Length: 208
Image (tube, rainbow, N blue to C red):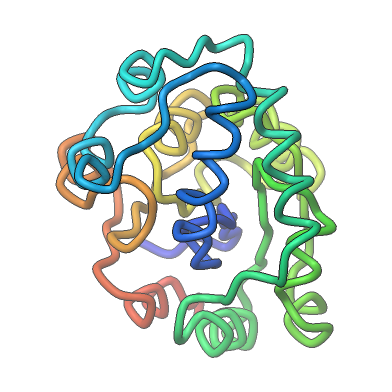
């Protein structure tokens, strides 16, 4: 199926920020009083759904926006994280095919702009940052209105269970990627409409 509007998550989907996240998480855990992710538990924790992960780390939901704001500030003060190999070419290919591209992220628009060069930013029609990890459905709905697009015309591409849950709440297809924060097996189990093993596979979303 073709989706005229392709909305991307950023961290773990377009940008390889997981190594930075793991390091930052240790500092944030100490500051905010939840459990840090130990190296030998990374794989097991990646297999948990978002609510399960928060519970496992002793991380109350009300702290999510506070910790997210600190994470954004830490990333802003660090060197830009890299895009996954092939992402730049994939975005150009989709845009040249006629697809409308957008980014919806829990990160800041500023941090996205630090990673994407000016050429790639020109390919992005809409961008929205600072979305609550557990409340992205509201931002997706708002983005659909901005784009004047029906939910059936859009797909949200992400790497976490919460991304898929948000998409489903507003009737948008979910495209899961197998290289991000959540384990590929967990994302497959939730029944995404599309699953992408590699970045080049996203090219099949081309309109033409």
